[in-house]
Image (cartoon, rainbow, N blue to C red; front, side):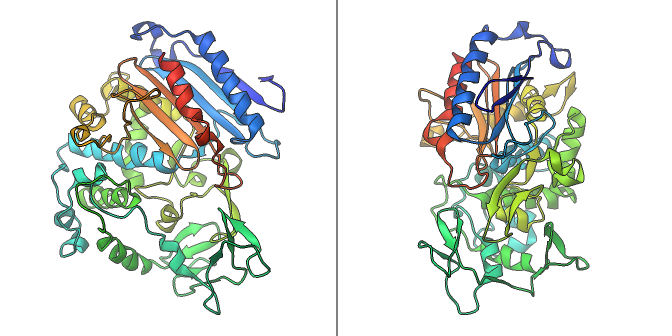
Length: 434
């Protein structure tokens, strides 16, 4: 450990043979020192400017981890340095590292098909407007479903019917949430929410339990959410929530159980849903101060409100992990689904999901995976995903490189978008592939 000034704590671990691999098979030589200097400079700048309080970063190839570093602190109090075992809320990276990986496994085992229709698999949607949507359309975000539904807001109201949020600060709206101010008189729907445990109710926060009857309302809202032209691209959280439902019905198992099977085979333990079930509170990064719904700085529970409604296990969000665990998944993907001589996913499935099936239509998307229109930062074959909380991972099968950056930029508020305005993660990604 060494101190780099301005209160920046940096831990450097460089492995040239992680898990028995060596760097010799990389397609393009990698200058570790040059890239490390560049990354340190970028991180120093980001921490000084307040892009985020701390981060984990790993650069690797299919055979090795070349750079693995921890930077900064858990939050801006600067009391707790970031450690390797600390886990971050991955937000939408969960879409691929959870629901999509599970789907890839099931496709390879012929337990589910990309042509399967939602209504044929999940009976509650059989006679609804979304019954004919295919698994392929859900994974490529071409279903026509709206981007999201704020389910949790129907659990909140005010006694006089005043709005929950206002653009102006006042005595009635004193506290900030995102870029709006919160009504001080918000009340909770006690038919659906309890602040004490109840039998068969679902814990959605440390002091909140949800009546499972609420899910009937959720399903009904999703069933009529196809408000956009089918076949056009629109990124939607609802798509992966439905993918989760399809995989769970097909297998009779819950998403977290299905994902854990894969993680166990990979030998990784610092990844999963509901982190307080498998790690300690002090090893979980805090996220946002939520003045609207949970009235707390969120730590140990998922930031995303929709995933919270589902008890922290959702196709759209909910995973927590450290960068080291994700690096093993990256190596497996770059090795065509194989890790340490064990075939985790079928090679042809990895290729199919990470390719660009829709680029001829101007849609730069894989199956579950994010892809980008080639530009100064991204190449045509790159694939990965980002997360709202400030997380990023991308892989380049041509250079056999991957980059993982985990931050909690939403601490203490999601209004902090400095890392995006600066193309922060994309610049580092470009650097390591030069």
